[in-house]
Length: 460
Image 1 (cartoon, rainbow, N blue to C red):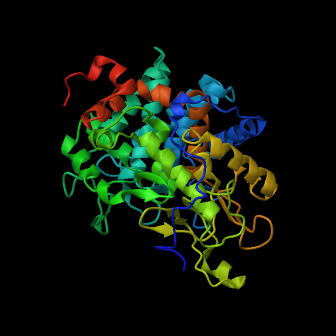
Image 2: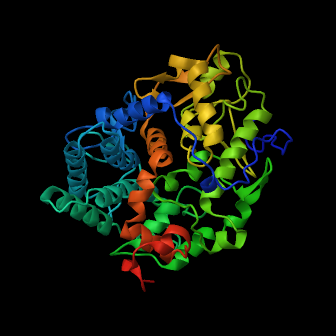
């Protein structure tokens, strides 16, 4: 049986034990392949962006429905600028100019209550089709803007302007308006339907959303918003393949907020009661996915110890499956994953799922990245690194391959590669006053946060 509630079980073949603290182990070396991957992935953001406004395409080659940008991809693109400087790919001046161009453009947009539409025209920034004002995708844009604010810290006019623009864009966001069913924050709003029916209630990728909403200098939500967010955690808590953790099936939910926030050693009230932190939780979720691929209950071709990774990605779609005589259901774009209560799996592997977990579990991610590259070669690896996804069951070799790149899948690959190498994005954001304030208002304590500056002392 395929799909929801597909068979999953704990097994003696569960991968390497994950009991050792990752902070206590020596980092594993990355070879020239990873240098090449990081440079190619950076080039996606640098070369495909519209240089006139900094907008990053949702996907490349262009969406068949028209050239559009994902505002979340722009947030990853802003982060990529500074990574490019640190790696020596581009100059600080070039990166600063691209970031300034981007922030000036968004400063001129007025979509609604400070939030931006999920997809926008790559040239004009106008709403693309009938998409929503997206609270979480606005969050990823803001994360990139605030990262640039902390990175470009020189006392010279362009960088002063950049920091002010980031403050202004962030300050315009009316998080209280988005609390349609307070204290939770809505997923979005459209002129045609009004507020979305669902709110952001844990556990998934939206931790960063609440951190920024709590830290807002103009429209902050109260600490009860974080309590509402964590109030549904218990139903996601369980043990799968020997890993007891807070479960969310697709791996992007365990990765996105971690791109910018170093969750190692800091814990909110819920995690303190479990003697766990969110970093270790993501590590366990990563191990679950590898163990599931080894177990391979759906009997997909190529799944194994070094070929795994389920997350939101493109897929072959039902027509492709029927054309090859397969009776199983194949999805197009869909969030695939393995969770305590749900499995969505059609044999489609997304390299970003494993690669963006590099800091959590390098000992299983590094060999997975190498094997996928060596085994399937140029079928899945090209100009900007790994293509978004492939399905080996549907044909020879790599099988069906999505020969496209998606910005929100490229971004975590690049950022988490750099976080593993140097802690770079985490290190910069640990100094951001808004990140510090939001985490403290959410009740986080410990580690680097306790040692952070006293600028937010006394705020509630």
